[in-house]
Image (tube, rainbow, N blue to C red; front, side):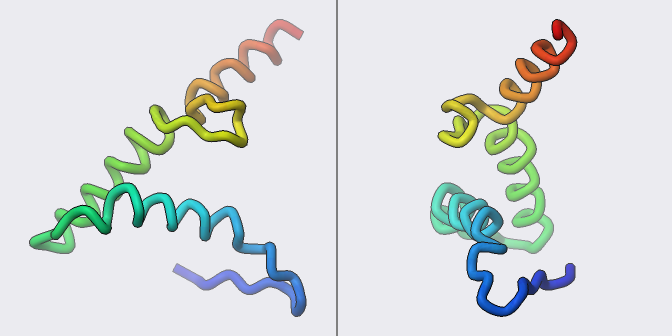
Length: 80
């Protein structure tokens, strides 16, 4: 993994990613104790792929899950 650095004075560059990490920590990591690194990785993968992308509603997407938003958008684009 490589760190992302913005230009000098641009403090908003990493805001979306910081928000995602904050959600992950508050909704999953801080509520569990993990025995192994593999268990931790599996839990985080499941959270991102199953819950965060498919079920969790995002205010930025009109309170729809990202998967539902993408499906509706592709339908709209196909109809146009």
